[in-house]
Length: 411
Image (cartoon, rainbow, N blue to C red):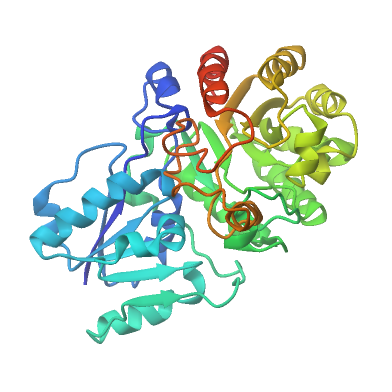
């Protein structure tokens, strides 16, 4: 069996990091971790190739070589994924779609040959069995949130590591919080599941043995969702790093309650973490209450940021515009907060209602939904996909200025 895995192009927005890639002279920010992991789950006897469209163009002869094309995509890659599917159909190559894009918008890809919806670990063996029998189903859907205990090391040999600004690994899935706008718990549940420490070390060792010495992004939506387990992992990483002439440095995403745990912050720094992305969302308390961001309301947000910084972690912040409760001066309040608190990189985006979230259900019930999200939350034509309380133009125009102020090198 010949499998071509394709990672579609991410649209050129702030979130594609292309502004920073020009500085670090890399073709893409992070490798296609999902596709590389799926590749490692396929039988060793199958031939596999991978094309990352953020790195290079796709050739027709590659599509003709494949028995199946596997497309792994996020919503922000929808346009590129559509082009890939159309090219495959024109050439008669069968396509398997997986990832958040196809889970959120399966009806937009009614012409695709096969869909794998949900986490692949619980259904990949069935997909493989049916393909080998020549009878794959139109659609496969995971019925649960599988254990991460048996996830293999990503198939790094399918890519050139030096095309990327940082490598990526995953430790956990799921988040204990329930923010109204977030679809993480829809995709991965509210009970964080973690890999065994030995698995993480095997992934780090694989990268190290292939010559990687740069940054490693731990892509978890909330790295500290299970604090006790992650402390054990950090101690293991500290031991692994010792004695190496060039150690990895790490960045990750976490919730603001990181500031409540000095031991955890200390362990992160000792393990090599130097940056953490926090979903700060807004300095306006009413906005935090509106979106159910309880973890950001437990203490003073500025003090939490300062505490994390004092422990040696630079803070990157995610901010959202478009809450019903946003006051007219929300933009200036965000600018003041970012500058006052030394946020090294501020990612400012528009509120987007994603199917499956509590926000989507509420707005749909209120008759306020307008169109499907494109996944680009920096562009009002692709996000802010509902009737806003504030005049749309009063949101869109200042947002562009704020984004230009804080675009920076996040890598």
